[in-house]
Structures are given as C-alpha cells and as structure tokens.
Image (tube, rainbow, N blue to C red; front, side, top):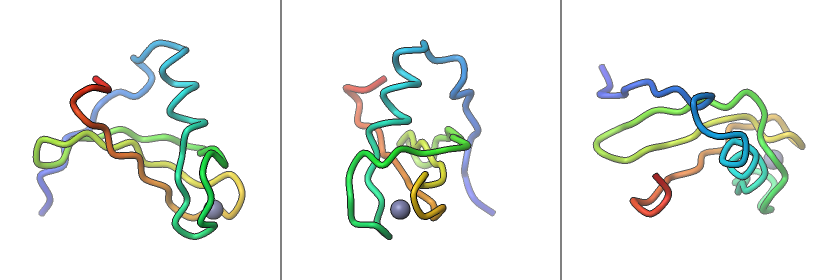
Length: 70
Ligand SMILES: [Zn+2]
C-alpha cells in the first residue's frame, strides 16, 4: 500500500507540460533532456513526481518537483 495520490499532469499549462516532458534525467542513459513519454503525475509524502518513459531507452524516468516548481 502506497500513499501515492494521483494528480492530473494534463491540467498544467502547455508550457509547463512541454518543459517537464523535455527536462528529464534518465538514470539508465545517464543523460539529461532525452525527453519522456506517457507522463503521469502523483504526490507521495508531500513531494510531487512526474514519471514517464525515456524516449531513448524506454526506461522509467522520474522528475521530482521542489516547492518552487508548483
Ligand atoms: Zn534512457
């Protein structure tokens, strides 16, 4: 059982969505800004995460949002 709360990524502005989809870090590729597909946004223990798939390798990429971002 997780304390994960789903949020609606697509309720963000076009600009925000674009930025989050482009500004990524892929652990698997060890590269920034490869882009992500199929974004999902959720909150876990007070932190917002945007999770998607790396456009290059298909592995999960996770963006953690700090307070300044939302
Ligand atoms: Zn990758």
